[in-house]
Amino acid sequence: MSEPSHFYSISSYWPISNYSSQAAFGTLRTNDDVHGSIPLCPLTIAIIDTPHMQRLRGLKQLGVSQTTYVCTTRTRFEHSLGVACLAEELLRGIQKKQPTLGITEKDIICVKIAGLLHDIGHGPYSHVYDGVFRKQLEKAMKNGKWLGQDFDASFYYGLPEVMVGWAHEDASLMMVDALLKHLGLEIDEKNLDKPLKQIGDGIDARCFGIRNQNDGDEDGNGVDSDQIILSYDEISNFSRRDLTPLALDEVNILTSRDWIFIKECIVGGPLPPKGKSIAESKKSNRISSVIGRRDRFKEFLYHVVANGHSGLDVDKMDYLLRDGRRALGESGKGSMTMIMENSCVAWGKCGNPAKCWECRKASQDIKLSSDKRDGYHLMIVYPDKEGRMIDNVMEFFANRFQKHQTIYTHSTTNAACYQICDILLLADPYLRIPGFDPDDGKTLLQLPLSRAMISADSYLLLKDSILDIIAFSQEPKLQPARDLLKRFHARDLYKMVGQQHIASTNGKEIDYEWQEELWDMKESEIGKNIIKCSALAENDRNAPTEVDVIVEKRSIHHGMKEDNRKISCFAFDVVEESLCK
Image (tube, rainbow, N blue to C red; front, side, top):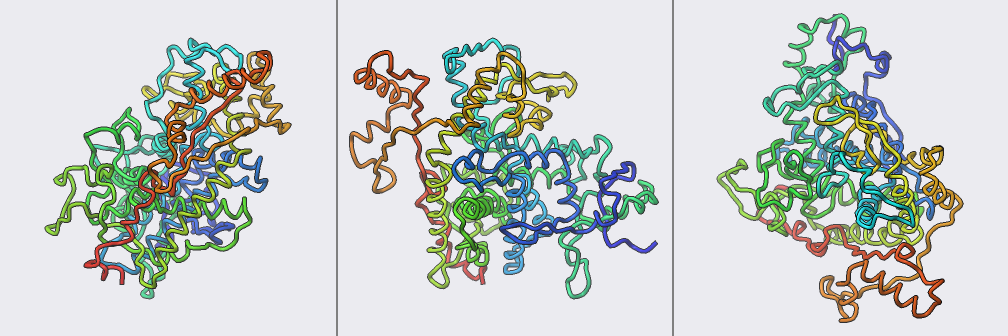
């Protein structure tokens, strides 16, 4: 039999009906309203066609922004495809301009998969679940009441605890492992440079890989960076013994190290120790080493999806474009085209060594060349050759700042977020989601919404449709949640009654003393003062109570929090400027 044009990493012992069509084994394409035609290679399709990725179709990217902007109904599934597309496009451009960097096809596909999976751990209604919901949950458990309803903490006794500092990125790491488990695979930390561990029926770990693009004809027309696939009929003609030499000799297998690298790219650095959140591990004085790509000359790969140096990454590029189109009717790609086309890699001075994991980690844990440069990193930079790139980059961050004010934190959207939060809080003690204990994989747990992230099985079921489940429920104890949900569906939303802008000329010190005092006050303290002032002006019978007042302090920055003004990554070492030519 002649060599097939495509080889797929499907085990010969798994007859998957989804892949029975010959057409399913080539590189497919899907149309996207931002990036046009996006190629979907066999490896991408295998990942997309899992329940864990399909779950993202049930999560709106902008949560409840459609209460303000009716067209903002896109999902995290669309966004994830866009991020994967941009990650590949960015690295291919750099690979072509700077071949000496040694960017491999496996590097590109790993970063692309990281882009595809970076939001796989999001909960319902955008950042409501891992943000305001968790914050208000602490208040409810402490007070024992919420919106006049008893909130009995005893409902949570005996349940596994949520790790301190948990955020959706931690759930993404868990869901990547669950996705691999669904495919019959598992990361083997004891054999990092070997194929994934086979733990069940699914994709054959020995064949889960890619063929280099230059394996095509002499004009370089190889497969699209991707995967070589056999149809099910062809696979069935091979024994597992026959399949192995083909996999080892002709295909770059995605190893356990590669999948750890994918997870590290989602985080933007080393993975946290088991049982510890990303946020808590960053506070630790002991910094772990990266495992996926230990060579210092590959460190820039970690900043494609989540850029810890400049905050300018393909994740932000994609969602700013999509949000502008859907909410504000913007067209074109603005400064992003120039940024993508001019991106390159060069040595750059670290802007914040105290927070940079690369600077904090002992140098002996990273393979360094004799040309050691303390405080410098190989960064993705944007050379200002025509005197325009700094303007383009700053325009990008100004665009982010503007969208936070007009879209993400719009007063109506923010009010709807708090109303959704209250609905979830009223339902949390009484609505349980089944899932297996992650420690033994056998014990069946009944987890409340607030602890669904403990089990990947439970989290897989948690989507925006949770409100429909509450609405359909006949449980009497869920009646307060259903009543508030009826208000939400009737657009009887919470109202913003006032706001106070805090002036800061330099972005650090507050200009006025009284505003500084106000900013230093806790939200609860501000709320009590509002209630106190209202009680003086109104009859006690009409005065608001603590449950009637929501106070939120918010600091909007350009993408790097307190370091939002730093552009050191753009002013790179001129000695290495030749790298970008």
